[in-house]
Length: 516
Image (cartoon, rainbow, N blue to C red; front, side, top):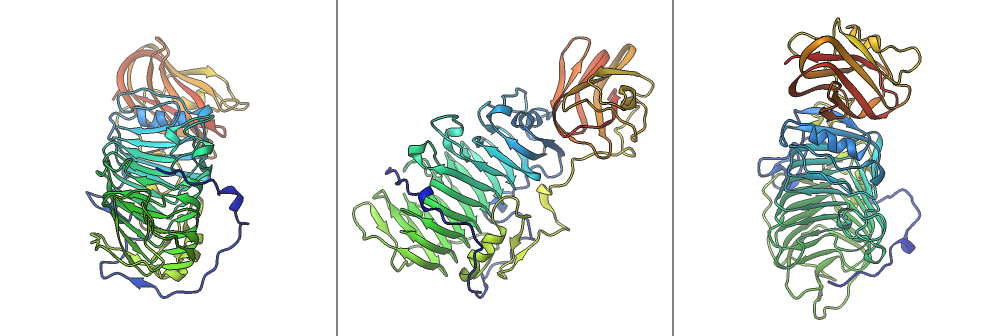
């Protein structure tokens, strides 16, 4: 594979509003698009993609807390939504062990798991020099996060250089409203922004920004890796990318309503038998935006409705076969799901208002006018507050903490350890900073298998915690956020909630304990 030349950062344009002439909205003959904000494209097939919908919602402010949330589940398939806020980096991401996870210290590892949503909330989530690796996994949603400057060489290294990388029997992934960016190409230590390898299928990348990288992304790691496919790319911005926007080896891709701006060497590279349906995209200030490049194993495309604005085309020679200057279809691709197209002329404006993290999850309905997500159908990634069962909805059984004693270490002024066992959610204990311990204790051994942590109004969020059998020091459970957690029954005289990381100052209103 030829390496794309490094012409990225020197070519950056000043930031400014994008405008375009209003175009007529064009629609397919298929059914209308999904509800505003819902999953679209090939991720709707093969049973659909719901992520952690219907499961527990937890908050995480560190990479370790994300891993703890995965490992705190009773099994690797129990649905979970992990709301992420703050900067996730090498300094706060460690390996966590458990029967429901398989994590690593140098990346966010979604390995051998299913039914997981990771969504940025609050002031935003940034994965800084730390990639998200999806492997042997299914039904994954990643939404509203930024992943930047992930390297495969140099310091630090992570995830093979991919911002988001999928490989080894991955199914049904929806990546939506994310920003993926690098600061150079392979010679500077970077690899792909969005890669799929080794039998990855039914993926949608929507309303996202990919920029300032030598390589946008690929489907298939080599000419022989043709087990990947059924991937949809729509309403994304590819800006200042040398090549691979994307690179397709085998399989089928549906590429529509994307804005391509400054593809420096090549763009959509369909090869090794791949077939791409390329509809109503806007290509601007770019070179060789579609074709088969760097191989003599041809790929194919069906084109319609695209705009080529200041696009240059090279002559065909050897393993360099651009589709232009007048691209025409050389295959036909049938799409099994409903979708609605924006007119290509309005794509730059629509994409500028919708694509990327922290844009309010706005989408398009084909009218060339951005729409807010449907408030009646927030989907699996509604970025609300952490789930709190509330004082009127306790777990079944007797709260063993009522009438028990309490102590701990680290206590903020004006708070009391005893406030967590008084049955009053208006009183609380807070640590003096972001870490501390509070315990419930009894005069004789008591069997506990479940705790419920309630937060008071105005509380900060628990980024990571451990539940300890204070008698033996054994870790009963780990996790993040508030709510209920179950574990193997333990007979003990004292149980401790140890907060190891938090965003703001947590206010623990009640530390409830239950026998079952």
